[in-house]
Length: 309
Image (cartoon, rainbow, N blue to C red; front, side):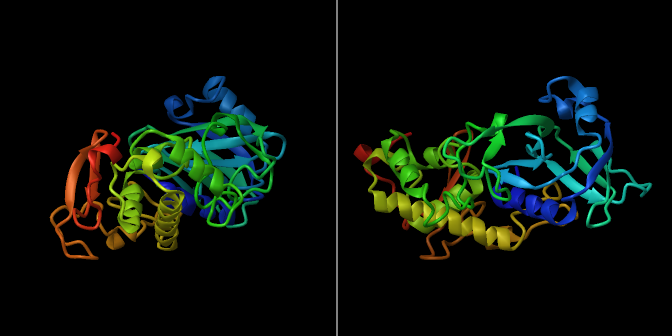
């Protein structure tokens, strides 16, 4: 599943290639891909046609393209969704094309924004924007103090200037994590606390911070939580610099290219391989119907009094 750096790579590509473009027409090839849009496929197309894409914003794994009048085209990529800027006159059509937004006046010269989704967990919708409670910009890529209504309950992410290292919102998140009675990896994956962190980057951040995934958040010092959030921000910025993490052809950027951060992972997916820091074999354990990868030496399991599941 695309995580924050992968989605940010897509947002950045959209910001460079389609801002200022006008929607000439819309084709919906699979109604299920616009299932979250009130009114169905015909309403989705009608509400987009003739509108201009004025920004490309993101909070966590949600992308939106504001339309300039209190509404936005909202996208969630799900497990395999792709947004590809293409030449709409090209006769080749992707076998998993679900929605095509025909464009004119795009700065890149592209004439179509294609939503491709093999596993069909992603979705598009035209939604209303609502004000942010603190009056800060809704997410990275926009100055507008508004966020799509379906995203309002999602926490900010660690690349958002409000929450990034030194940002005005970081201390409040540290306090919120320490008030929870849960394991630290569960807290890191809680999208209402900090959005955009998925299983891969959670394991990488915990390894960097030398914390075990079952460490109880209510027993952690503020300094420990700050160190973990710093580590999570660092690992995602490093992944972003190389286009994200791709294990197959399902995640690509707007030009159809894969990311390369998988080559730099320290623990995720490396069961039995030596820890890059101490040489101890990496361990994989079941976690929330997924896996947790740790170094048994660098990330010692906490005592029972300091463990939460």
